[in-house]
Amino acid sequence: MPHTVEWKVRLYLFEDEGTTKARVVVDTGATALTGRGVAHRNPADTDVPEIGDELAAGRAMRDLGQQLVDAAQHDVEGTGAPATGPGTRPETGWPM
Image (cartoon, rainbow, N blue to C red; front, top):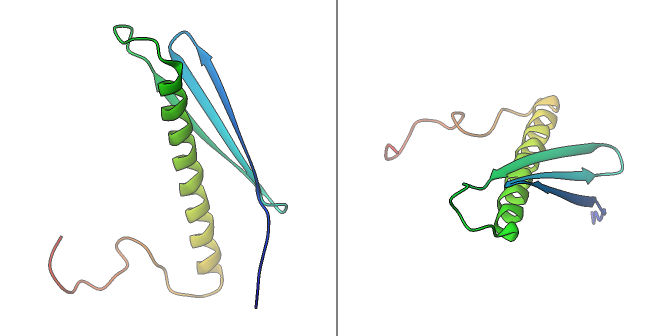
């Protein structure tokens, strides 16, 4: 059964005196989630705003990604399916 949807994602970046803040919002049509990230420039480092943008945006997207995975996990558990993820696998094979 084919399934196609479009989610809208917006990324906002704010920089002020060596601190870059990022906010990324995904709108699924049914709900919206917001991820946040921050990057701080060491005063001794060269001022390259693009680096702060990349770090803050990446951290915000990582935060948003974890929220999406957590929401999916909650939804899976709501169906009565067994839990998945770290610590839920049987302890077999080589130790990590």
